[in-house]
Structure formats: C-alpha cells, structure tokens
Image (tube, rainbow, N blue to C red):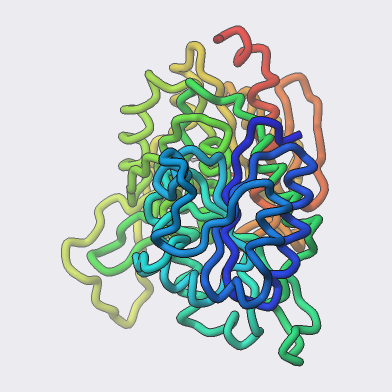
Length: 402
Ligand code: CTP
C-alpha cells in the first residue's frame, strides 16, 4: 500500500515513544521506506537499536550524525520524504517548531522540510491544555501542519484526560489516507468563496450574517490536498489562512463580486460557499450614526447576485452553489439551481443540530438539475468538502473539459 513512499518518523522523549516501534513496524509491513530520527531524550524511552532494526535503516539521533553515506542527511531527507511524521510530538518539540528553534537533528530537519508534516501530540492533559501549547498548535495548523488529535483516557502520569497517543492503528491509517489520497485535481484551478460579507452602515457598523467560513475553508483545503490551484476569496473570518492557497480578502458583496469576476475566466470551477448579503445600505453614513429618540430607518438596495451572473457567463466552468435554508429546503434549492444555472447545489437546513453556522460538522444534501437528491449523514466539514469535490469530478461537464 505504501510501496515507493518515504516516511521520516521523528520520535521525541515521551512515555508513548515505545508505541512507535509498532508504528514503524506496520509502516514497513505496508512497504514504506522508513527513516527514524530520535531526539536525545527519546533514546531514554526506547533504543535506536529497536527502531533501527524495525525500520531497517540506521537511526539518526544527534546533529552531527554520520552514516558514512554522504547522500543521507537531514536536509536531503527533509526534501525527499513524502511525509515527516512526528510521534509522540512533545510540548517541547511543538514549542520549538512553532517558534522556529532548530537545535537538534529532528527540529533542524523540520525546519528544512519542504514536504508535508504530520504531528501526533502526546503528553499530560494539563500540558496539552496549556494555552501556550494550544497557541503553538494553532500556529502550526495555520502553517499547514497536519495534527492528529490525541485520545482521551488514563494517562501514564496518573491523570485522566486528553493527551494519550492515539491507537497505533489510527496513526497508521492517517498516514495511509494521507499518502494514498486522491490527486485528481492537478492542473485545475478552483475558486472557493467563504465567510459572510459585511455591508457597511457607517464607519463602525455593518450588516452581516452568521457564516464563520469553516465550510468554505474546508473546501479550499480539500481542493488543495487533491492538487488543485485554489483561489480562496474570503469575506472576514477568524480562521487562519490555509497554507498553499491563494487567499483574496474581501469585505463586502461588491468586493467579492469584483474578485470573483476577475478570476472567473481562467478557472475550472467555482464553489460558492460564501454567505453573500443580498442587500446593502443604499447610502452608508460617512460619520457614525448617532441615536435619536425615534425609530431609525435604513434603506437597503440589492447587491449583485454573483452566482446568478456566473451562471449567465459560464462556458466550461462548473458552478456549485450553497443553499442555507430554515424551511422547504429541497424546493428552494431546486429553484436556485435553475435560476442560477448551477451544476449542483449543496443544501443544508441550518436549524438542524450538527448543521449550519460555526459547527465543525454539517448535514447536507446534494441536489442536481435533473431532480436527484443525495442526502448525506452528519459529517465533518472536511469530509463534506471531499464529497463535494468527488461530485465535481464526476460531472460530465468536468470530464469533457480535460
Ligand atoms: N450568492 C451569490 N451572490 C449573492 C447572494 C448569494 O453569489 N448576492 C450565492 C451564495 O454564495 C450561495 C447561493 O448564491 O452559493 C445562495 O443562493 P441565494 O439564493 O442567494 O441564497 P439566499 O440568499 O439564502 O436566498 P434567499 O434570500 O432567496 O433565501
């Protein structure tokens, strides 16, 4: 399953280090080429001899390690590997990486890496929950590091909580999924819009909606993972910009309109996850609006319907719309497909638990122009993003375009 794949396994000094012998052994059984780098403290928990024997490669420990083979050193490995997996990733190692410290062979290898990195943090629950550690983890996520969440349970130190190394099977499966994932969007350019636009009332206030951008960012990341060139046109969100994606930041619907139209002619698909305000204040006040005793009336005027306009202009591009509804989901979604000339729509009822704004999961249905409706169960937004892309690549319009 992993034949031809090169994996660097970085082992840090945590009690879970002994479990990595099993990870290495399983990766070898799947026919990966495995190179282990250990920190000095990891060697207190498990010996280089064990990991060297299992990986069938010399284990590297200190900075000035030499095998006698001039081609195998950390810089070369950091570029040749398909993946660097660090497990267990201690608070110390995460802190070093997040802050650009490279003072041992493993952290130096990471610093020089141009390949994907996957970290499996494992530590005491209080260390794991420490806000500084969490901040470091967020920073790494923002830079595109893949983090496998620790499991909860009884910890070696006697505490109970989150911090256990996930089961070896889980780690190996994550590696296999990552290394065998589809690369079916190479050479394709995809626009993803995300977030809720803001329409200014005055210099300090705006009208917006509850969109957090999570679904759109998940689509952008999934498309990037499958090899697409992604242009993420994003209204304001609190999410870190995904690594390896061109982010165009906009605020209002009209700014989003301009950005989408600029990139549209050269793209293969537009996935319009953004919640675009249909109306904006006709004349935003130049100065802050002062309260008075009577009611305040603000006149709103229509914003351009970006997706409708794309539907009129499209030639080869695939168009995917989103419909967030609170009632009559399918009926409204069907109307939108027809009116906006869409290839399909992703519809969700935002009133259902586990669906809608701000959650990490969603419950959606795909609705097609011929009336087919595919309801999906509750899933993570990342999984839904991949399902959306599966549908895009299955469309006759997409396949004709190759
Ligand atoms: N959309 C757009 N431009 C707008 C409004 C919406 O491109 N001005 C896109 C959204 O990104 C989404 C889809 O159209 O993909 C949503 O359709 P829409 O009919 O606008 O949804 P609602 O605003 O929820 O519709 P309605 O007000 O009719 O319920």
